[in-house]
Image (cartoon, rainbow, N blue to C red; front, side, top):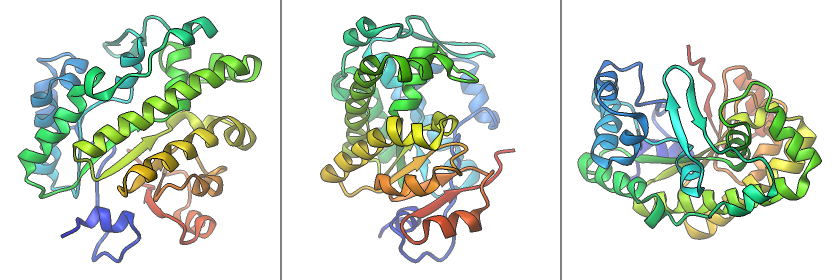
Length: 287
């Protein structure tokens, strides 16, 4: 039997809309906060027993239609050679941000089974614990969004350093995006092999770009990731970009099965723009 969420992702008829939450295991849950108080964030990501314990909490408490493995989009960045800590109330801090071409040359393309083995182990344990009662969602950040963290050294309002490299140092930016693209393909495929039945690509910050810059500097890498994954697996792929109203039609050309849209887009207008090309996901105000 195929799960409701997977059927919806494949544009097959469903008896109701399946529901899951992007930050499904998180601080809105008392049970999560109790575990988080005892463990550093990355320790939870890297310890399969802890990652699975908090991944299961929303399934037990909310009875949502899918489980998402507890992890973070910065996991592959650390495996590439960037030192990351999570500062209390300030989010992630990258201690050796990318400054130039030489820094990018030093980055490795990690092997998931060796450098991020805990992700696959967590998915396998999660699958065992829930006995295939719900599908498991795997995920990764996309090259552009990961690049912004690596260049800015953390979260940013305007991504000025990243845009500066993108425009003024095309050779450096291209090499970084190439390395990130290879890393994301390997990272997502390893999750699929471990048992993920849908994978979501988070390009959260791509919405800060003009349509032309998105088309020139971001879209080709998204498309390549999805194209390569589809050669390896038939698992549905979802693409999320925050504030994506001005690039929604272009996003359909990536080959993604599902487009995850934010709450600032009218869902009727979104549907008219993309027609029956893909499944629409999201649109709820996170408040």
